[in-house]
Amino acid sequence: MTGWIYALPGSSLAPGLPAGAPPLEALEGQPGPWRALVLYGPPPRALAALARQGGDLETWRRQLQLAGQLKRRHRQRLTLLNTATMSADEATTLQRQWPELQASGSTSSGPAALLTLATQTVLRLDPALRAAYLDLEAEADGGADDATAPWRHDPTAHDWLRLLQQGAGGSPAAPPAPAADGMADDLPRQLRRQHEWLQLLGDHEAQLEHELASHRATVEAMAAWLPLLESQLARARRALEQTP
Image 1: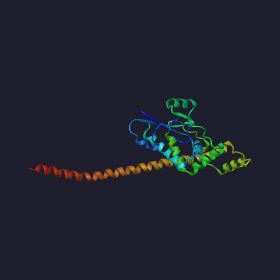
Image 2: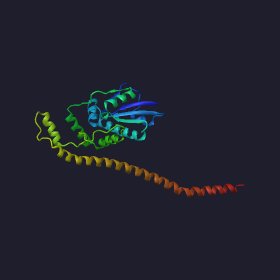
Image 3: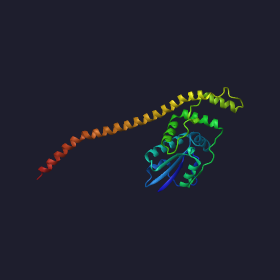
Image 4: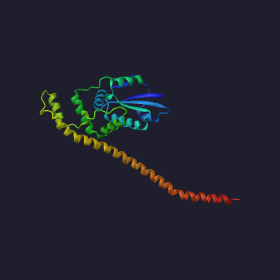
């Protein structure tokens, strides 16, 4: 069985040598038996990789959407893993199963606080990108990122101001909020994320309902033609019986 490896931005593992794999977009139509391994990483790592490699957000979003669709259609053939959630033993086992894999190098890109805020801002400004990642995460074989990871929260103006003050050598204008206040602030964010996910599911349900209505209309049209066809067949049968 032919096997291919695809490493999306942010993965800490990548094919060591070109494996002659078809583009991810062409995987759907590949003939014969095949299997594929798709690796990805959390948004902060992915954005760091895009910044380092000169990538773009639109391509990354298409990759996320396509990988999620392929996983739904080919669950037994395609393995989808977040390398950031893998233990050292799991990574070693995976490299033993796929010898072509090797570490892809550092994914850092500047201070961690700056990368976190940049990620929060990008996902806030691009809901489609956020939805694509959450959809991919829901289809993954491995574990999801930490549900309390900072990148999942919306950015605030105070966060940016505090980071700018620290970068200028100053001190934050206000001390960090108490843990209880942080938990209270996080509840609306969690509700917004759940609302976004429910909206995504609602859009998918509406699409399925539209397709069902189209199929029902086709069936009803065929059913309307059935009596006419039966009448024509009956006349043809009588004509054949009367033919000398």
